[in-house]
Length: 506
Image (cartoon, rainbow, N blue to C red; front, side, top):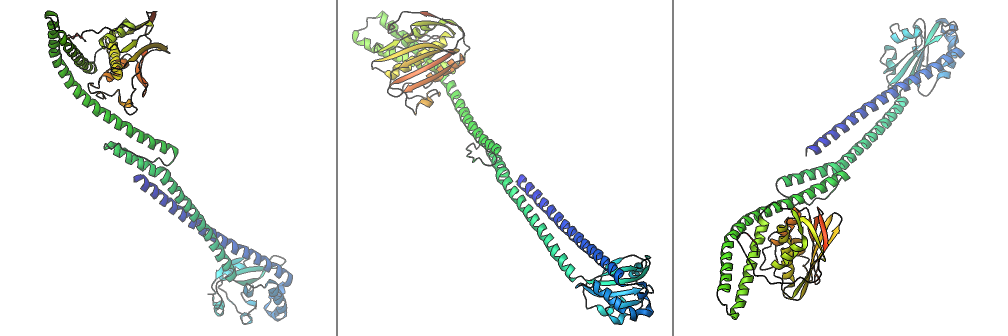
């Protein structure tokens, strides 16, 4: 609002200043035109009078004793300078006496105190605007504003022999001046109006393209500061402001995502701490159950019909142990113990611990890779991915294929299954902690895998096609590795009894 009011105030002051300057210039131009018009009139009439006097008058015509004889010569002089604007003509002698006038009763009158006449008799042309307020003009007040000119008449020897006093009606001149004044003020008003219109249009454009967008950005920033991140802006104004408003909206969305992620992280931390305590408390009972089961199987003769029950207990303990380890792998943050290891040894160990049934075949790479990694953490990754593949295929005949290749500066490991694939609406969330579509899952397995791979400086991606299968792609930086051929063929699947210890994995 400050910006809007400040701009409006400056625009109003600017328009007022332009209007005042325009009026002043119009008045100055009008006065200049009026003064120029009077000067031009004075010059033209003075030249006409001097030329007419030179042609028609002589020194003797101004002698008071010869006025009757010089009357015709004065009449010719008057006719030569006569015009529609001339309303009175007087000719003075050097003795301040009127020797000729178009008003005969004034002839012979004498006025000694006329300052303008005295200046003319001294040889100086005088002009003034008169309202006929002099004593000799008392009977001429029926006329309006007049332009009075005193022109000295000189002899051939350049001596002043008389003065011609001429009155011009200002009516026509004033009409011209008034029309010119109106034209000047009209042009000035139009100019001021055009300038004002331009200022208004400039202000409108400034408001639409600068002020309004800035106010919108300010409002959005205030909403973000108050915790409202649902910003739906409509970019407007100049390009830079459109970009800025879009970036504010993008920033609000990112802040909202970060806030949700922070809340989710806090929730996961709280759940993780609780899960870690529960997992620790459950390990001892599970160890007791498993050890007791092994003692019974080895010390006593178990009837064949009880073997299936022992196997079910074994698998149940394994599943519980696997879920506990998934929780611990996600919650525990431990430093990597990097060392050169055989990739296929880690894979084979992971396959054995995954309890993959005979109905599912597993194909490992034909070439072994000696890579630098934390073998225990990497085994957790492979085990989780193999268990996911097994659970996706379930009891149906299936195939799990592990491939390795190099791509630029990365070692790429692909684990592919021919299960039903992952639904499109589920795919974006599979790496989120606590997200699972399986009744027996914890929702932490893939999140743990992603964390471990990223700890190694790599990435974990997934490709899937519903009805065809899923492929998890691990990319690890090539720190140091070697390859060597290994025997091809299916890995022998040996159902191992789950062995759970206080400090180990099954």
